[in-house]
Length: 71
Image (cartoon, rainbow, N blue to C red):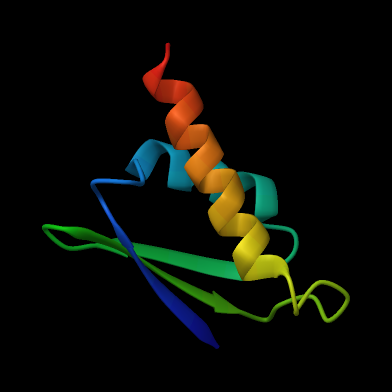
């Protein structure tokens, strides 16, 4: 299992949820929140993408956050 904590100043929860939907077929992704952070855990990661999944997830979530702020 891999865990990541995202700062809410940079990542929007809605964008993270959208990213979970987009990447959900590649891993079991669990999301929880605290006052300042969005906490993710990745489990059962598809072995074909295991070495890049988390980085690609974070890139997608950040790009989605930025894109949604412009709307």
